[in-house]
Amino acid sequence: QVQLVESGGGLAQAGGSLRLSCIASGSNVSLNQMEWYRQAPGNERKLVAGITASRRSYYADAVKGRFTISRDNAKNTVYLQMNSLKPEDTAVYYCNVLLAGGKTSWGQGTQVTVSS
Image (cartoon, rainbow, N blue to C red; front, side):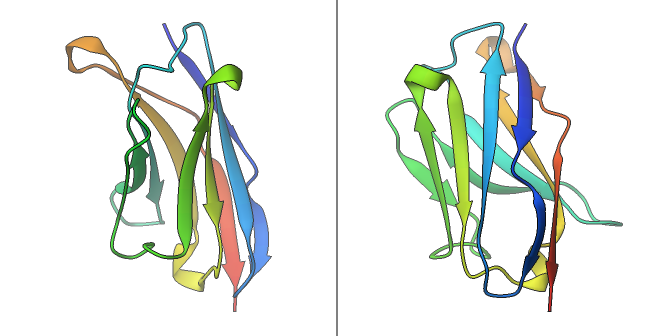
């Protein structure tokens, strides 16, 4: 069983930056694809970015050019660097790991609030 814990959320001004971290425990996730999602109030959870075991990354159109996903396998951690933040980036951000058999594991989320 993989447990994920997100951190790094908080309050930022528009144009500012935050870096989210997601630490995995219970299993080595270096060979697993990992993703960040976000969910704003009243909205469905949506994919923000993902990174494969070979470090290929992919992004939602809304964050391309502003967000960067990376991973540190030695620390069993995935990051989301968020630059040029906009008020519409306000959401709870969740980390997700893709496991064998189509299973996934989610963290508890971290709140990001961007003021205008």
